[in-house]
Image 1 (cartoon, rainbow, N blue to C red):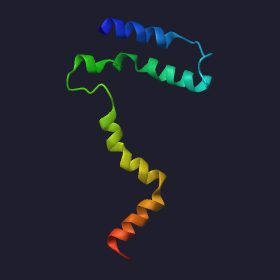
Image 2: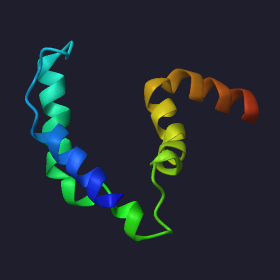
Image 3: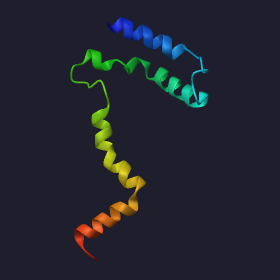
Image 4: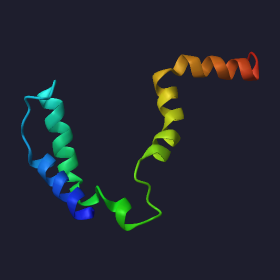
Length: 85
């Protein structure tokens, strides 16, 4: 199974067929990033404790992203929770 996954990944990462991509620049950026990380793409197959997705990391980062995007909302909630200064 691993050999098949790695073979297919190599085929996709060396493909430079942009006709299917809506944004060729973004497509190339993602392709190069994945190519750079190629040796780490299937780490989860070697180590049972490594998740196949990054869902846990995404969930842990979410509060920081929300506070960065909506700082006024966070300040308002803090003011409501603690009362006027």
